Length: 503
Ligand code: NI
Image (cartoon, rainbow, N blue to C red; front, side):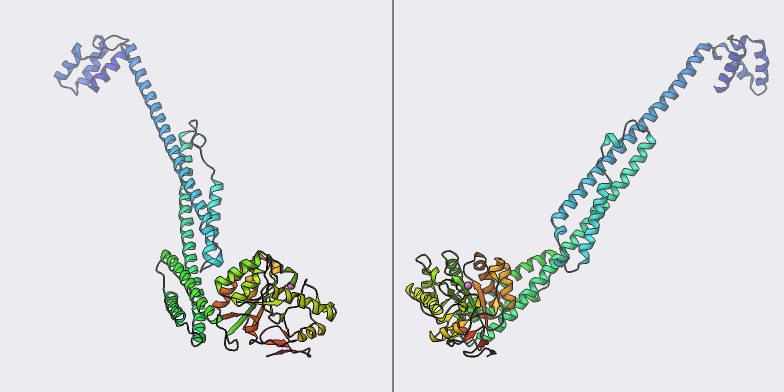
């Protein structure tokens, strides 16, 4: 077939449109070909039906068509390749934006969970630093890679080559963002696990310390109360607490659960200790030479609101306290505090009539300040306690001589809560708890809401450290000496002396 066409094409070009068979030269050509061909072949070639007879215009159309098909095909192929590149690019943009929003979401979650954990809250400080570095790196990636839109990143006007380059670059960024999601998530999980570990360790250590104090309380009071049920309950709580202290966690969630159990155990252990302490404190013969006693004292009342709230708290805690009252504050709206003190076993002392600085007054005026106040206390249904606290702690020989004549002791303090200065319950609690020792007299004021708020915490913490809370009279063995100045159970100045002695 090819041979026939070749011959036909040559014939067409050489014979000016006439059929090849009519040309005389074609006979020679045919005879040259004929040397390799059989006679039948030649006969077949010379047959008029087998010789192509396309006119030149047909050849032109055929060639033109072929060129058109080739060019059109090439164009279609290029367009298809461009479309594929465009779609790849758009898919890459969509994946990139998904990865970006996942990273943003991860960072947001971290900010509200592990991101707020400080190095002091974890068992290993380096995990917090690592998380912070990981978060910074991830944030940097986010700010370096703005949100992409398919129209901008994959323009239809871009070449296929440039679209492919964009796709590769966007995919690389997507991979980077995914890697950062994994890194941040891992670092965050590590921080939370470390925090849970530390929380458990802290709770166990707190519980362990409390259990040690409870054992001391149990041993020091075992023979001092008829209420054996309180001791039995405390002993059970101690055993349960010690078992929890020794427990180990196997996972982060079990650490959290165990920490919660430790907290609950600490609360019930505290209650059991309170019950034992209260049962001791309610007895008349508390021996502060054998127990670790502390006297809480409250000045400047009685006030209408905070004084009664304070007594509500003290009643709940079964704590007896000592109140140093300003005479002129005793009115019909405050006098019920005095009858409550008589009922609860708390003591009412003398803080002058109008908060005068007694050391600046004449002996006559000192005596008047003290007697007016004592009369007001008694008139309100109270009992004279024989305890005087001069305002500002200001005393001199005149003050103690007048007190001595009236059969009263001067009661100062060795722990100043500074509650009036901070007006902050937490600070007041910390100041008291950190400064108390066996035999302390604590100065507070009954007129401040912050002090009322601090009292339950102070009582719990002191009792958990094994302190027994008593009145000043109980602290000083029931009979403070007239004219003596007491700073604590063990620090005092005898009448006639200026020397502070330890007893
Ligand atoms: Ni005062």
